[in-house]
Amino acid sequence: MLLTKYIAKSCIVPRMKATNKPDALKELTHLLFEKKRMKSVGPALDQIVAREITESTGIGRGIAVPHARVPGMKTLVCAIGRIPGGIDFVAVDRKPVHLIFLICYPPNMQTTYLNFIATVAKLLTEPQHLNAMLEAENAAEMFAILEKTSQTFEERHEAHIRKVKADPKIEAMQDGHADLILLARLQLCQEMLVAARSGKAQVRRRIENIRVLVEPRILNHYDKLMRGRPPALVPVEGDTCQGCFMRLPSKFVQQVRQDPDHIHTCPNCSRYIYVV
Image 1: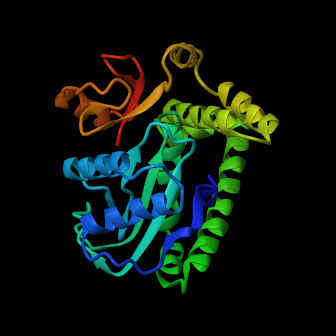
Image 2: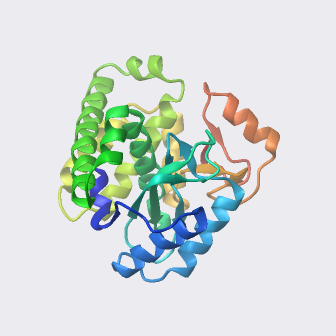
């Protein structure tokens, strides 16, 4: 996706004041509030801190993606903070964090948020993009880097969709999670259709192009969930299903994590699930 659709230049801090993780989370959350990107600080900050206590969102390579699902918001928003010297974020690779993407989003944009994080991680896996963000002189330059790189990534994604439509076996050979990936794309496009002010015809075409690739039995269950209790596809975080918020047996979650060849559903709410 185009990351800068959800980022304002005024919400990018090239040199943060914070010198530790709690202060960094507060600084960026307050920035979103001060720039009128959300209505209050408390609910979002409470969720972000609670999530970090459960498990750090430091994903490695000096990047962190703290996040909160906030009722009442109209769209996803993101504040970016850069800490040249780095701070301890208890990241997965135990290295200091230099770039923080703090994300707040409404409950009906869960797939958008997941795609946002996936795009950030994918782009900044490439050393030249990460170094460009770390070396940019100001917020405007950081914004321009994200806009250019995510635009290129989005175009490559569209080309891939067209290739998969021409030969569905391509996707299956590349990833055992073929149906899961397609459901994530489908749910994202449906969220985009609801939020779109223009270009709805193009989004509808994307939806139809994806639907024909999904196995009918899986698609039927997906449609039933979307009619009755969306979203149909949700993550499992900290052994908790983010659809019904029920804690799942750790053994079951581990099984889902280790079984990339099958698509799984929550035993409580029947939503499609994946482990993050």
